[in-house]
Length: 307
Image (tube, rainbow, N blue to C red; front, side, top):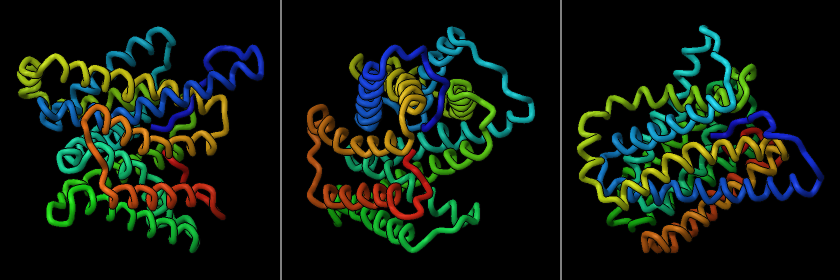
């Protein structure tokens, strides 16, 4: 979730903040690279909807503590519907699609497909917001979608291809809708306030998956519940705050480029934790997707940034 937060504290020297930004960026990459691994572990005991609810209940409680410590303002009454829509796309739909999708693809492949958000942002800019999209952007989008298709088909091989991998693309589309709405309609809120209300409203929708959740939690092993606890605190809460700090102290486009390190980091973590080995087709598809997204971000007339 790309947000912008007010600076955390004062700056003491030019070099020290730079080190802090680099460390915060590394923390964000590690947290979000862990996300598909934590989801894969959590799915051993929880249904996809239950896992999303548990994850964001933990994140909601954590963000409530942060909100009480920092202090956030009440949103305007007229903005409640918008915040509910943001929560639906950023939390509810995004993570339901992500969790169901990861039943069919590996953690490494899921991390690659999730980085296709800028491709869908470009499509939305053209089809919904009627923005001009040039030949360069269209070429990047088509190449990126080709790379995504290679990842989906190559993850398990043509014979065992699982269409649930397409749900990861739905999750990326959902995120791009959230990002477009956030950019256009939420300038009067600081990053912490926006993150808190987005997480809380999205979590409320996930309560439709509450039946059976407590039973699943009791039956899950301690290692699975620990993985889900880490999933709720680090990728779903702390990483958002660290990302807000990075954006408040560095160039947005340059910071976004660093997020392309998430898929290779996730693949390395998955090989260590889950013993997953990406196929050559997944690696080729990953390179095509990431190069397309990078070219879209830095090329002529670049519109959608990574989110």
